[in-house]
Length: 511
Image (cartoon, rainbow, N blue to C red):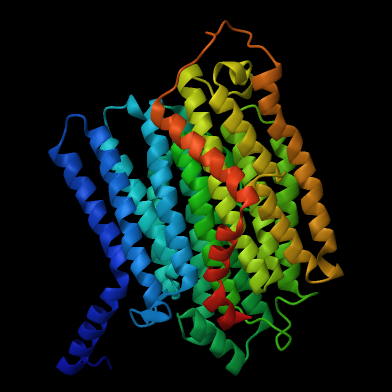
């Protein structure tokens, strides 16, 4: 029979919530920014596009101060163990806020968004909403909190994908995204229910402890884990959960595509690392996630198929966004290589690779925005002759693409080098994975370099002016991202140290 909580119990709960709120300030601040943007949209009707974008950038930048304060609060579990503050979560909070700022900058530079007069306020509100959800995903340690944070990200992403609602490809992409998202969420919820039924717990640490102490049926655990992996795999866009990616990436506005390909994917990997490293039993005692085990083989298959499929299918793409969509699938495979290693070095390599991917992929999408503004096209064939007429855009795109291939002296080379080094450090059992990664990177060289080939060595079929001018802000941000891509390819220690910091406490807990 249900018992009504006593006054003392209620006061204890309220006291716990108040003490937890101190550690939840970045999320509270971002939620306040969410509400402020709604008010700005309602009050200032004229020139609100410019005002909304500036407010979003300043507001997101302000959240970095609150995240910085959390460096002295690591190791805290709040809200009854549903949320954790640690170095791993802090790393991703910086990552997601920076991604949000870059997305807003890309939106300010995009003519397809600037020419719209309706729905402007909702656009920036939803971007901030996505950032809040992704920040929560990185810190969630409870099945209910994981589900809530993922759905917050997904609901905002569905609407942003269909933001250009008068365009058929945008509404089609949004509908497909919604359908695939609903199915994957349903599978994940069913997997969560199986885990809860086996353990009676929703906290992932407690789930692991219960499975280890009470024992479990391997088949049931495998079915539950596969269902959960389907939900997370859809978020990271790995094969065979990738089917939504090409149409969604092509239909969404270019800035939204950049956010989905970098930040949303990183949020999925953050959740994947925390959940499967903690909740699923692993080690010699259980036979899971060890060389020769079913789980290790499953992750290997996902990684290899993603690298091969993404790079091979990208060879036939003519639209820059679809090309980068299949490229994103391939990069999901490279990131999975670091997760497969299952040690501190592998996790550090994974986080470093995400940082490098942030720089080079946002840079590539920014150049795509600049070119689309001037040509009105996303077709790679229309990039012919633009290298001479848009020298900064041409040079920057070449650098970003070289980095995506993984060639020196770019940060992408260091990222892949760290991934492959982590694999080889485990011995000969992972050599074949490194070889597949290298060979698929060679394949990617062809379709990536086709873009600079068109820009510099082929002349346009249509008359173009000798010089095509672009705005100061897009050029400035493009130059910064290009220089950072080259700088961190040579002086990569700061990014490497940051990635190592993020796995310090996390590594001590798990390895």
